[in-house]
Picture 1 (cartoon, rainbow, N blue to C red):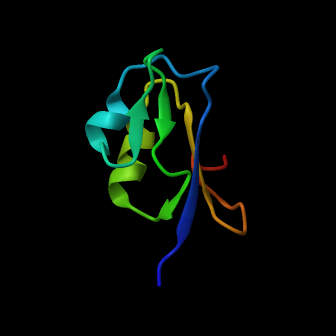
Picture 2: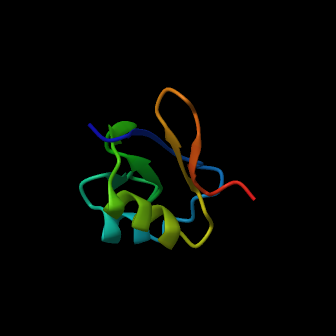
Length: 77
C-alpha cells in the first residue's frame, strides 16, 4: 500500500487561478468565492495532486504524508 497524504489549501494565499482543478479535478473544488479546497483532505498519494500543487502560482497547496507529517510539497529547503 502506498502513502496517504493530507492536503491543505491556505485560503489566505489562494488567488483562485483554478490550476489545481485543471490538473486534479477529482481532488480540488472551487467554492463560491473562487477559492480552492480539497475535495477530501486525506487521500492516497497521487501524481495528479502533486502536479496540481506544483502548478499553483502562489504555492497555496500544502501536502504532507498522513501520520508522519513529512512534507511532500512544498519541499523543505
